[in-house]
Length: 115
Image 1 (cartoon, one colour):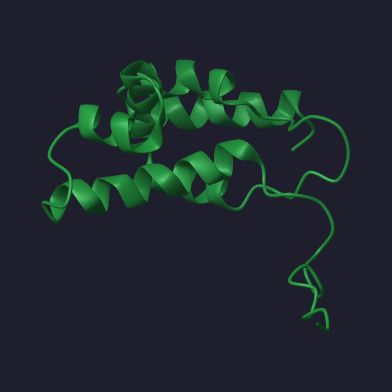
Image 2 (spheres, helix red, strand yellow; image 1 turned 120 degrees about the horizontal axis):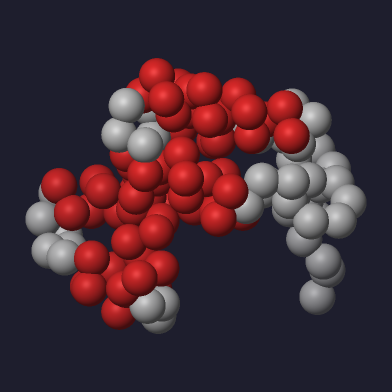
């Protein structure tokens, strides 16, 4: 059997940061709930084989200001080592209900991580 084309060919080096993947997952899960495919976060937890607490942490990302969500989705790929921004780094931002405050915290986080 002949090998098929390498699916990674043509992709930029590195990997998409985990927090960006989780942001995308939160958006997708929200669609599943809105469309009635899934009723509750507990159902999502069961489907994903994760705890309800983890689902809540991920879904809380939807509380970020839209421009911050966009920025998280477009974080630069990680080429070496750990991702510079982790889910736990975003938790204090998510808990700020005011988008202006969130933006201030986001800018500070980006500065700390060289962004």
